[in-house]
Length: 502
Image (cartoon, rainbow, N blue to C red; front, top):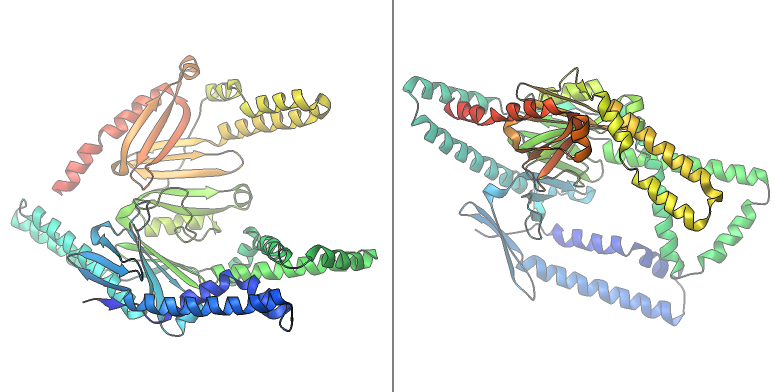
């Protein structure tokens, strides 16, 4: 049976239109509310007609937009002048994401997106406005579909088992179903949110907002003339300059705290037997859920400042999201102490074990890093040749920076293969750890360049199945590690066969 979106879809679309034109509205209806200039008068009427036309179009669009679920496929029908039919098979749905603006909360409405991980238009399916009950029904529909598929796989497996083993399998499934309750692993305290406002540099977010406002206003009024007058008043004395700087800092800090609270104030990480749930946002709530069995690897990031303060961010690399995709809620809270991050990771994903006492690179690796051509230095050298040698000190700074970075990269790079686990840690002043298991690595590579061969070193690579085929590499490890790496991966098929029999 075909269904329509909630009528709030119309209101939501109008809010987006107004948000995109907020500066134009400010100019036309606030700064020039009683202006009799023909440009402003006609501009107001033109904008009002535009809004009315858009509103009518959105109403018609709401009437013709419907969706349904049939034959294990989600179908969406829409289009006023040109009809479109989008269908997404349920087996392709990897993650679920909700977004609930504050005006949706009042009416119990949300936006639900079914993410497939395919990088093309129309691959994901978005329900722009559905009731919370309907969103829950859709999520339950997907859970039932997955449970049915797991039951079919178990039934196929049971055919090859003896009665006692089959009975054990059924008991295990029943036990898993009974444990499908969510457990909350983390919610930030007020102190942690306050810390996040400074560590995330949220107060700097006011700068692009101010620049955007300046550009928008400059198109309509002479902002430069107004600013010159304000600057003249401020620069009259050191007292006025100091008070202005203090006022700007206070405004920026308060803005940063509010921004961080709105973003992280209700952050929550929870999980059940099959999925991980991450929720964030105060006014506009966002929620993200991902199947545990879709996670291919874990990445632990420590930028320089976080590393100094002993903080880390744990991100998930899944079959549907490639590394580097912008999704601010596809990770654990980004300002967790390292030990706490490891603890939460162990609770949520015990199959990804953080290894201790990682191996260091040999001294030959440092010698090779110093011998490689520093292309940035070569570029700076060529630039100085054309602009003049009076800036020779810039070349000195660049050269020093390059080789200091190479030294710290050598010093901080670690690796280890232990049982089914493999872990790389790379980086200089910052660091990134990558953790995965043998079963999740689809391909490995061992490469050796000319210089590496002279020093008895090589490069190893792992491939994980993601939307972008995630590749992780570790340069300049000893040659004997290449053979260890191959032998480590060679037992993958044996593991898969043992798991399928059990």
